[in-house]
Length: 344
Image 1 (cartoon, rainbow, N blue to C red):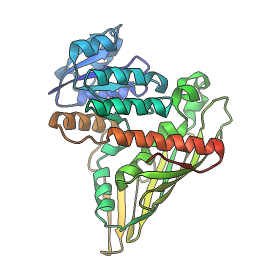
Image 2 (tube, rainbow, N blue to C red):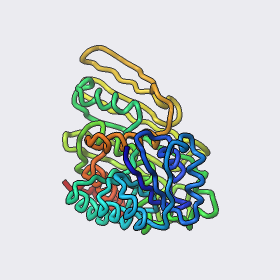
Image 3 (spheres, rainbow, N blue to C red):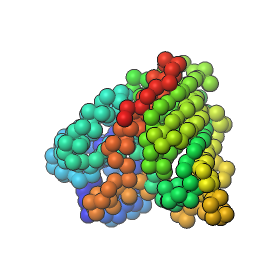
Image 4 (cartoon, rainbow, N blue to C red):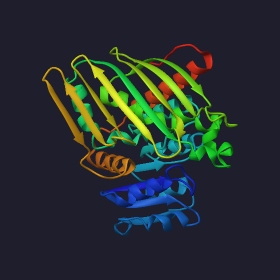
């Protein structure tokens, strides 16, 4: 049983998702929330499973960390506000799950990564799809050699335009480059780009990108993106994303290898089905996800279980930093119209 701290406020990104996830989680002894008014704790206690937890309300992060000394801290704030809270949690010897993008500048996250390494703590960027029930199967297919050496991949992530049409959106932090690191790529495409490094156990080396504003809004960040990615073992990938739908999502992830191919979608038509064909064995399989649920529920529970068991995290600090460095290289490429190297 561990103690968990939630550093957040009433309008934190994915705040309700984290409250639901922590209320439903097992292995939690006590939960502390930065909530001066008590409104967040009241909301949390309405979640399924909340009655089995002990909830504590704190004025601020310093008070929570000093009094609770939690083993695990979830930080969810706009990008530009996140680094100081992650730093406080690391100084309190807590492992950290930080809502992406977790910074406005990659140098700020790199500094946090050095602190985490020095204190033997881990920062997990909240790329929750890593814990999707199908991802262990997909990782086994690719890394087990069923489709041979991966040659190429295509990633698609398309979302609705509804959020863009809200009057308050152009003034929100997600529309500000100085606060949000970036737009569609840093908020949604990031999940699938991360799955590429996770499933292949490989690193990105080169990036070429174009970004745009298809909806022609007065915002500082992109609403559409195309990225070409090269990986150290030779795989070449394309990533296409944008706010194009009237509602809902469409997504896709496909990898072609020397001995077969694999594909899945986590949103939209054909969602939650993993399909692959191996030329080597002549075998084709299609597997639906066996579990209903939320990616954030799975991700938070997985983090708690691994911290409790002192086992390797689902995503390491180094992987989190590498992902942000890859996105940063994509933005530099778009700005300079030149291919950019990703730091080794």
